[in-house]
Length: 324
Image 1 (cartoon, rainbow, N blue to C red):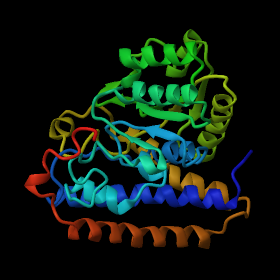
Image 2 (tube, one colour; image 1 turned 135 degrees about the horizontal axis):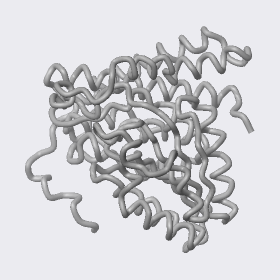
Image 3 (cartoon, helix red, strand yellow; image 1 turned 45 degrees about the horizontal axis):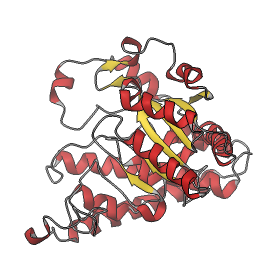
């Protein structure tokens, strides 16, 4: 079932929330206000937004080091995300997790991790909990082409299929694991080609098309809720920025051509979505402009909230490290 007008506009809004949030992150990192690593999600917005649009608030997601887009796509709070990046107590994890560890269980965000593929078994475990408890929530994990070669990824897929767990494995194939092309590290044409080995469907999707990602995820969600087990979805996408901000050695030793980057920039997921929803007359260009303007105000407010939020006190250092 294609998304209705309200959902189409929500998808556009969340893509703009990710884009403008990340542009702001780049600005404050360049100025020195934001310290430490940050991995921009610019160029991949259609993947997280399209996939999360097919989920309920009670469903769970887990992400990776490129971690801002996933919680924002799930409906996360911009102020909490920005404050966490700045190490402030108003952040998702009270300023103690930083850029790669955003979590909000209230809307199903299990969190992210800088350890490659480490979120895959976590999402699989959440799906096992759903089945053991007789619940109907599902889980979805975002991972990259580099993570697809990790043992934790293969073990999780095998177990999920063996036990018919309600989990969706969503590979964001953005072409490179830092500087290594997936074509030099994957023995099949597409990562989704591995799915038959786990006795699950493998779906290849245009990751620049939010509606296509949504529709593929809807089918995977239906299978999972019906007890038919997991699905592997591979979204072909591209990160427009470097692997992480401040990665000087990559700029000094380019691993991809300017022509390649420019070619992918021509397939920017936000204009693609705007063209798709306005060409049918369901949404007007004025609707799209209004969404973008509103989001700019929201992101500015999020940055202001983060700047005004205090740093955590030294006495709080060891709080929240163990379960009560």
